[in-house]
Length: 434
Image (cartoon, rainbow, N blue to C red):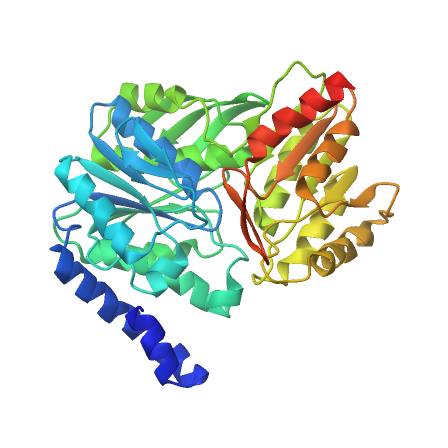
């Protein structure tokens, strides 16, 4: 039994909400004491934000690795040192404290130069990253998400700002913050750090110009002060241009050269479950992505719609026991941009899956979509993938969204094994054989 669970039993719910962070802080302090504060001495680049954290973390890790630094990585998708990166099976970004301590010890024993740590708002609010000395803090964006936990958007933003404040207190670190200038909260984050670097396409000191996008990636010129970088990114989408700028800002602060930055970005071919293209010889595009928030939907749909010659077919769901307000928003965005929508399960947990689909469908129908014509509710995710793929013709694009890299689906009966990429391949094979 954890200290948190003991405190939860002892106090009423209203009181528990108030004292919970202190319970987490005490638990983190005790756990660090028992493990010898394994985060001490590590130089850490923290990456936070609603969307883009994982891709940006992988970019920074790749840039440092290619430049000769021994680099540790902890993200939603995987963790490890150097090229020995292990997949993360569990549905979490910042792991429970005992696991976190164990992995930090591995980082220390490997004598890494840098740790790239994807950091969530919950981990910051609950003090689960106690003992970490951030040197560089990166913010990708802050949009509607996790309000089931934080309750208000202001509390959500303030939780993420905590990472910048921690970095600013690290007198031995670089005290540098890399911030999305086009995010409405940018000024708040900039005030929290001594040396802010603001990036963007339309504003900021680090900007992208001469952009050329295609389904296979983007090329652009990144400019800051008197420096220019000719960037070739194999990760498609405007959002990945922002992620690239964030990564450039972070490693430039560390001291990577123009040549190291240009070759490092070009060296990253993909991030598993992030815009993963399935190519089994079919005459349409099939993409697996982790997008699951209204903001990520809008950015993704805008980009893909422009690059699609035929229909845009999207398949997604929304999780149970999570932010319910976003369901209709997701549906409305899909209805606005997609030609056909297939709604399916996505970690129902103990919630009514059919009710979740109905709530998403209410948003879809605001754009005159009709069930059985261009809106389909297929609760079983495996069947939904095969259904969506079977509806595709030459020149179409099919997006399978929400699960990405995840290895399980959470149901009322427990977790069941899942592999979205593998199921996508099977769906292609199924229609080719039939």
